[in-house]
Image (tube, rainbow, N blue to C red; front, top):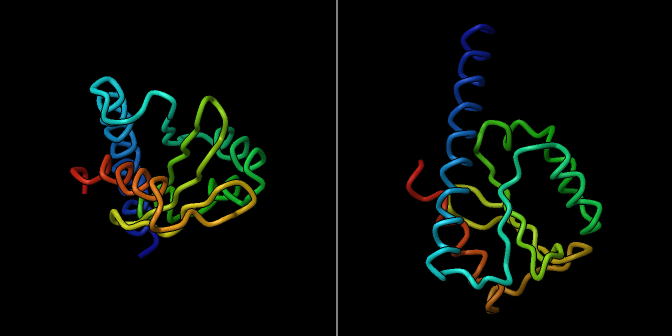
Length: 130
């Protein structure tokens, strides 16, 4: 039934917003505790402007995720990692597993790198919300 589907979608979007708020608080706490190097800024996007701006700076398609129902309903999450104030890595993950970790122009972050380990750490900010 259409009304039930729309109600579920609205509830999923509400839960996704709450998860992103929790993740932002967790990341701020980790930065304050020194668990993340201060040269990094971790951004959990919540607006179309954040996504489009980052997508343009990184020369990738992240700006289009604003329209994806997977992101709106929280089945896919995004994080932007900036280093020294500049876009550095865009991260997409589902259920704590990295789907994509990309540098500028969609260059893949090697899975055996310190940068990938940072990406894995960032996904843990969402771990307690599921």
